[in-house]
Image 1 (spheres, rainbow, N blue to C red):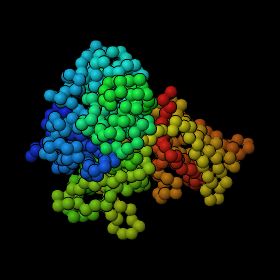
Image 2 (tube, rainbow, N blue to C red):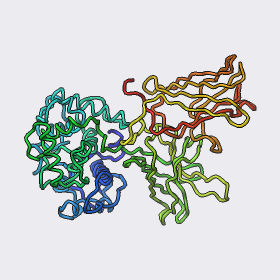
Image 3 (cartoon, one colour):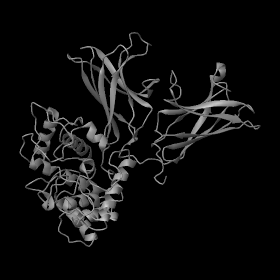
Image 4 (spheres, rainbow, N blue to C red):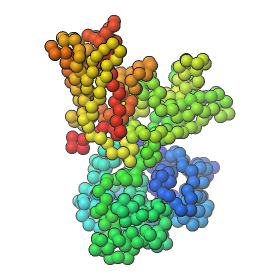
Amino acid sequence: MAFFEELFAPYVRFGGRRLELASSRLQGTDVAVLQATYDLMLAAMSPSQGPLGRLLAISGVYDEATEAAVRSIQDYFGLTVDGVVGEETYFAFGQSERPKVGYGGPPYGSRNLQVGSSGGDVKVLQNRLNLFRYQADIGRPADGYYSAMTAAAVAGMKGDAAWRGNDGLGSNSVAGKGYYDATWLYTLAGGREIFTGRNGFDVAMVQVLLSQMGLYLGPVTGFYDARTEDAVRSLQSAGDLRVDGIVGAQTYHAIGKRNPHPAPAPAGICWPVAVQLRPSEGSVATGRALLYFRGRSLVVDVTVIGLTPGASYQSHVAFGSCEAGGQPAYPVASFVADASGSARVAAEVDGVHLVPTNGWFVAVTSPPARVGDRPTILSCGDVAPAFPSLSPLAEPFEGPLDVRLLPLAGSTASGLAVLRFIAARTLQVTLTISDLKPGSRHPAHIHYGRCGEQPSGATAYPLTDLVVNAEGVGRSMTVIQRVTAIPQEGWYVDLHLGPSIAGGGDQLIARGDVLLAQPVLPSRGI
């Protein structure tokens, strides 16, 4: 979570201070956790009383919109509506603070935990892990002792987070500040016992898990009502537990026994990818874009300054890079700069499951002066997270992936490109193309973009030239290093006439889009 802590610095323990609207805006990771959890719960919940409110931009700053969201939470759960996040409001988030500190304390997240640690915060940690497949590592309900088995569970969750593109937790088994941010967002429940009269986002998490088991058939409300208690009692009865309707250590462990998913699935979110927008030559426009997943949609949130007040602009995500250029992939918004020459716009893009480590950039442009002209890029930033950011609701396809290359006008060449990971970050591309001239040689590439776009997308990876045998079948194999994922769109493979791309050799004779329902990641066995 190092990236999260850097993006929303300074680090402040969630629950460690009172949050309220102030003339000098409070900011930090605790505010970002609050905002992200609120958005996640809006996506997960179907409250009978109506929606909690509007989605928040995850900024890490306690602003007017965040205060309004807190007031809606307080009103929804019947708390004092003052817009201040104190003991009672933290409790609705499932975070116990003094004097309501869970399981006897210390407060969860207030210290590093490792083998040999003991206390109520260890029990909270174990409860959170026991909700998921890590209960198999711990092997028992929470007992408050940080054993080697608990250490294995912590390391397992860190590994799963890294696998899903959330780098920065490290590979050790220590529960520290970055890891706490992950658990507050990914596990959501376990900080307190839940029973009739206790409502909150941790109740919503339990409802989500029970509904996936077929035990709870009601809406996800966050209220511990009779239907929720009946589902808990059914679980307890089936697991030979004390049937009391109280969600405590034994019941958290029983839920995990029937939940094979890793965190952050099934109700998690991914950390935002931050993109710094730098001015193009002759421009002074700068800013930042945040890309993160909300449910099944990719949110692109763009803030830019240094524009002409009252002027119109556009923003979009494009295939390619700021240096090489590329083609627009996903429009964000058209907007008008305010009186200070700044703007903030956001859009949700459906059907995108992956933010790749390269091959995307975010641009802010001015509209073209004439129809047919290309817009002028004023500010641009390459999207380059250390790991691909995968939608938590998407399960990656582990390949191999077949890409069909079809002939272009005047050609009969066709065939297959097979893309597969042979090691972590190592992609093998095998080309087999028929109906070529025996003995000929043909350059090939992977490009950013889609087939048929003009101008063509920038080259992502050159491939080994195709050499054709006496039967007119050409084959080549290329190994490409430092590839972390194959996006579900945004690449295409092309084949040229050759034997080089000099002169007329750059003529395209076959090409095919890389299109699939889910992105391809290296197999976990690699």
